[in-house]
Amino acid sequence: MEPATLDVPPAPAQSHRWRWVFRLGPILGLAAVFLLFAVIGPESFRSVRNLETIARQTTIVGMAALGMTLIIISGGIDLSVGSIVALGTVVIALALNAMGSSLGPLAAALLAVLVGAFCGAFNGLLITGLRVVPFIVTLGMMLLVRGAAKGLSREQKIDAPETGLNELLASLPDTRQWMLFPVGVWLLIVMALVMIVVLRYTRLGRHSYAIGSSEQTARLCGIAVDRVKIYIYTIAGAFGGLAGLMQFSRLTVGDPTVAIGLELDVIAAVVIGGGSLSGGEGSILGSLVGALIMSVIRSGCSQMGLANWVQEIITGSIIITAVALDRLRHRRAG
Picture 1 (spheres, rainbow, N blue to C red):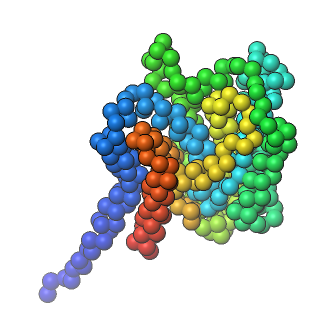
Picture 2: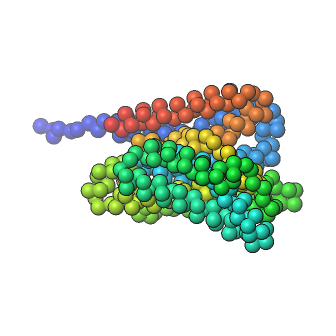
């Protein structure tokens, strides 16, 4: 009698293929959106100058999305990032006026990052100390930080002396076209590479995924969950401060009313890029791709003369599709 043999089901191979489809989804989506506007849009959309503009427009959301990715991977959320960006612009303008344009730029930029980190640490302390869900805590912080920005600026824009900070996101002159992108875009790329290393090769990155996958299991494995959460929100706050620096470079003034609703764009970038609001999933590259998708949509709609509501419908549809695909992926994995 021949020994019984077990047939190997094809499910694992199919699951592997689906996994790669979901991973490449954001990149394929970016390529599809860009090619669509490249075909139906004006010739100016495909120009090098417009590509530089798209990169500059992506930097603010992209910088904040680096920190938001870490938060969403850990199963949290942060609604205060837009207010932190506004506070950062106010802090920079006040610091430049106090210290002058000769010694102030670097100190003002660092101060904005430190203020953002402080706001993030406060978020983390409240979430872990009060045992309140991040949505409620950061919703309150969104109003608190926005109010602080308005109070410091006396509810008006603050003019600042012209410094090198103004050129971080400025369009490149002909003499510096060899740089391809402004300094602010290169700073985003460098910080993204740093965060990729953090997520893949450090204990903080591994613990963030573990907490997002199952906080209870992470505690049983000996992970200091509360401490890791405080670190995560502090880092995210610092990236909010850096995004504030980029916003100041774009506006060249401190504006307490700027970046209203920016938190939704940042969260959308992470979700479109493959991040799961349930936690445990997400990537830096995916979040940047998500931010690029939204910038390409804005640029394409603008150059085609389409109304703003068309852009909002397209972006909303992409977000819903991304969430639906995330649910489908979880069902297949289950």
